[in-house]
Image (cartoon, rainbow, N blue to C red; front, side, top):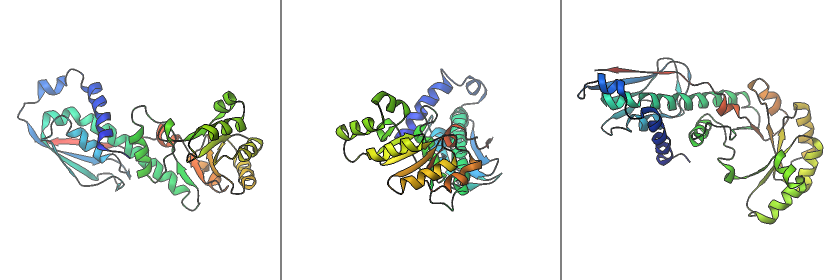
Length: 278
């Protein structure tokens, strides 16, 4: 769950990075008593996410800054949509503008792309899922944006579940060995997911008692065979090189989940503008 604590952690790092010893341009050009308001507008169609993060950024340096939000996370925007009004002294507003905009643009871009991808498979039972391929330090915010767009979250971190991948299998000595080791050591409430690349590995994972099986880089025809072989024994997740162009084809195979790193690592930012008035 995304909280103000998580947002402030991100802002602490962002302001140290961006301001350094001080915003020299603002210090030397803006009178201390200069104040007014700014309008934050969308410059293209999309889905809004990160409004609370942007508000927290604008108020970070001076809590006398006030933000009036006209729209909220999950609201659609068009070109020219007024998202918020920011009122207060110009110095802190100017020094925080870039961070506020960066977060809003990034998260809205992820939410927008996720919503468009989810729309492609709305007529199928399969659900769209993100991955851990996120921007370092921004994972909780980016995964929050995926949820705003209608996707589901995979593990938030390595302690969020068990996923036995190819290198774990190699290190453990096989799928069966890896699953048995976990069954003997981990709490019984934890579900075990295993990555497989062939029908033979799928059989091995099923025999070992895997709860979820990731079909990695399988062609849709092979996924279809995997769904038939599985016959409802485990949840199936399609993963690897998933693109929007063949989402429907993958969903039509009957898998339960489709995970895609591109939701976070390749989403284009949504464009906004911010203009001050005295």
